Length: 132
Image (cartoon, rainbow, N blue to C red; front, side, top):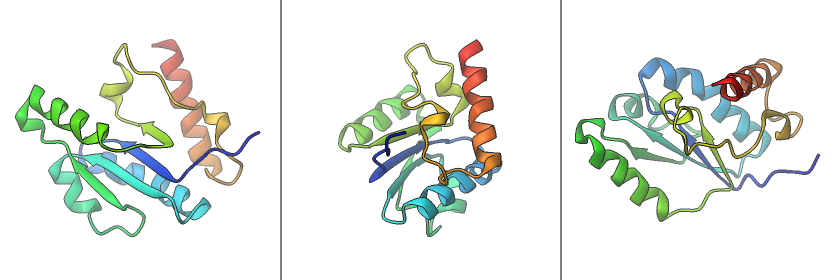
């Protein structure tokens, strides 16, 4: 297996506070594996208050859902100004879009990056995506 570049990682999970809590182990695993990785997370304002200041999160891009379609335009504009080695689209809504394609399959992650539970969850998500 080749080593993935992990200098800049984008996390897309912008739902409720509970969803953000479930993503924190992924963020922590990335930082544990490669501490110098810059992690940017797209979040709604509510969950952003919880995540802001977390030592593993370097940058938060706010998704202002109340702006409707303009919110998606704003996010697209913000993301176009940055480059990422990996984008982890953990947002269920995005995963169901016809233009969404995962960047890497779960087995592409280096050993040690994900705990056995995190790897299992990634495989479940991948199998779900493959059938929907």
